[in-house]
Image 1 (tube, rainbow, N blue to C red):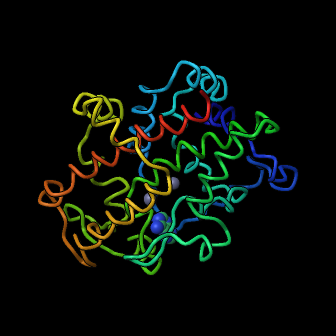
Image 2: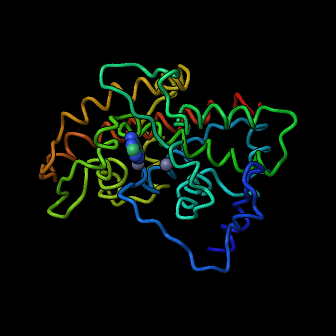
Image 3: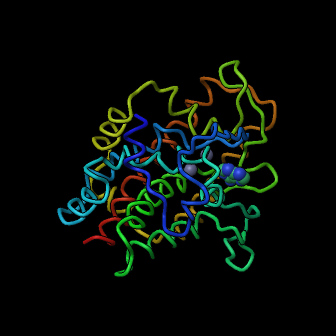
Length: 274
Ligand code: ADE
Ligand code: ZN
Ligand code: ZN
């Protein structure tokens, strides 16, 4: 597994790889933060759904850039590199926070970047004629990941509770937090593999529905997630005890978000590579 990752991860040119080796001989400095990530299953479902709708041309170029790996496989790499300090500067690119009821305002954006910046930068790098393949490979993996993150409503949440990371809840009597419930608890509780879940969502949506879901720009999708997150915040406050009732109420929304993420990722990639 590690060797596979070594093959897949190559540093973008902006990072001085001499200064900070990707896999140094020094012991790993693992930074434990409270921050959790739209779980692996969610990202892989988004990648797997998108894979089904890639054009021939896009598929060929992506196959080349990912060394034959799938979108599902590549989708989690942006999280896997988080424990390596060399990639710290990409941390804020996984989310954006702004006030409830408001709209994304670039003039107030985090100067370290945010998910809007991350998506925009990845698209620019992939569109540019002068980008090296090393950079294209890296930013393609970021883009696949960020389109997934964008559809986890709490990645477009409030700053004061760090997108729900600070809202402690219990999940079937175990400690969790609202962010983690939406990143992984709800999805993993379903006990389906990413492929099974992707197939399930593919067969239960019509092509007309998918066409509708693919509409808009990624900025529209940011605002849409921000609207949805209002409902998520209203669903549970600190100390809430969540279990079956919560899954009955919110699984349909989680599945819709995953389906949207997949269809929209395919659209972005087809627009880029077709
Ligand atoms: N850290 C701070 N805000 C966050 C958010 N909305 N999502 C994920 N991590 C965060
Ligand atoms: Zn997350
Ligand atoms: Zn992420």
